[in-house]
Image 1 (cartoon, helix red, strand yellow):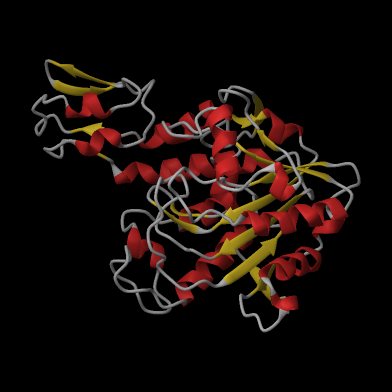
Image 2: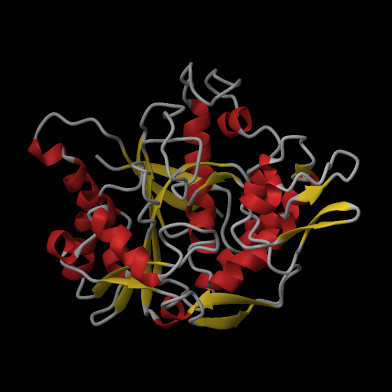
Length: 368
């Protein structure tokens, strides 16, 4: 059985065709107002963008969504979780300040910002999943306690998962800091001792003091490694990712996505923005050039169907030259493999379907 995915494009020939109007029509067409109950505390899960990044979802568009949620009688709050890596979103104080600087503030949106895993990322609840990689996953407590959730996603590429869509937004975005570490632990960097000269560049680059120099050379301390890749600055190329471990990372990520919505059946709405489709996650402190033209905004109650539709629409587009896209520029070719050749992001969809997170079969419905 297929899931319904609703699409609106970016064509506009008058005020009623503005993106804000289209978002509101999309919200209604997808039936989201019927998935929210009066009095619901509704988590609006999104990414506020790392400082220096400018490809995150425009707050004006987010306001259109929160207005729809209020019209349905629910009480929305904007939320994300603290990061594992070093940056301006590693604790709730810096994270909220970054959100405000990027326009996600009460004055503009009329709703509060709440960091779902608390001040330092330890406010978590273990959710039983009983899957291959994890028996339980550590989800931010305020995500678990929310009555319903609207997941707003900026679709883009990602170095470790191929692409970042609704599944990744749930997986990393709803996990506590420890939960993020559990996912990333499957793909920590490794050291080729034959190339290591014990120069110490990796030690200086590591933000978590997780690299030491031993008699054999550099050693990565797995228990504290953040998997940030900073140590790969090695001038001799001695530190590397074993790309063969990436499928295990993706499977862990999908299991976390499953756990984040396990107790919210029929209460999670997904809206994904296919615009500014850049090579990297919004966690990067920069935004590279887009690899394909803007496409539209999609909505569904099925994250797998939604991500599948997004991938298909991106791949059906012709890619831009002079971008991070190295190959696969023609319509119909896999754009994300053209950026990150060592990663097959389709694993997210295959495993997600296997564990019951959703279906890859979809019916695409255009909302005029």
